Amino acid sequence: MRLLSLSRYVAAGMLALAAAFAVEPSLTLNVWPGLPPGDKPNLGEEQHEAGVMIRGTVTTPTLAVYRPAKEKDTGAAVLICPGGGFFQLSMGHEGADVATWLTSIGVTGVVLKYRIPQREGMARSLPSSQDAQRAMSILRSNASAWGLDPQRIGILGFSAGGQIAANLITGFERRMYDAIDEIDRAPTRPDFSIIIYPGGVLQRGTGTEPPALNPEIRISKETPPTFLAISHDDRGGSEQAVYLYLALKRSGVAAELHVWGEGGHGYGIRPGTAPHTTWPARAADWMAFRGLLKPTPATSRHGTAP
Image 1: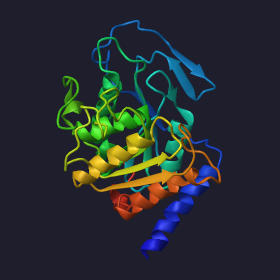
Image 2: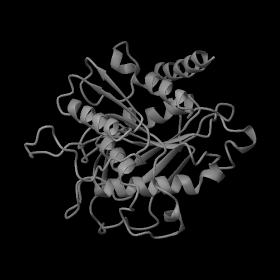
Image 3: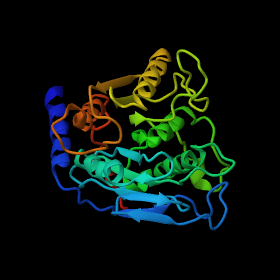
Image 4: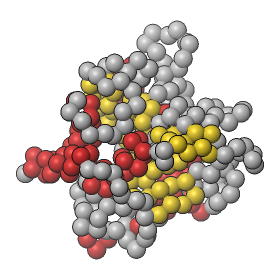
């Protein structure tokens, strides 16, 4: 019975990969009511390329909410953090396309457009991690209205977005900015995470062996369950995922690691025949096995908005 259930979710994910990604967000909203913490006015403007890549300066972080069809809606939700090295954002194959896949398996996908580039005087990943923490509080604050299960809200990150996800699953005990309103009363801890070819997990230039995790990544037994995927030929990231997995294992955190023989870095979600393109199916298996795709009662699903 369980195998049939898993196969159903895998098939749904693969159908989404084969389709043209055309789903539009049902709602887009700002992350902050005003100027984000630590920012100054007039820092620069965004530069959009081909509708899927953002460069320049992002000063107004946003959330794009993609909802599954009502009959598929499980009540689960995932905050998506695209990659881009903190100087650009891959909003297509690491953003909107991923949200479309999630909706196909009954999950609300929420794409975060976070601040880039690095801000002077702030740690490289701090502004974007602040944006992600605030975004998690927004999702939990709207869980009832949007028909989300507040116990099944996760985070998914690619590359630099993987570092953001790692920061959130290990830094939830403290808010990375001063609370500004009622939304910030909502918890920021993701219930699970999916981290694909992460960057920024290891400290650079320390010369230690084995390498040490970045100090902001403080794994404990309270860190939520995590799915990791990486390619052996990812020159910048393969060890990052492996050492992150080992740290999770040593802390007794439920984790699953997939290492593909090839694929490189930055492939996001795309249809194909190479093994690394199947990571969405494997992630769907993992989510289903952990009960994250089990529908909530129909009377409480989908809510009234967006």
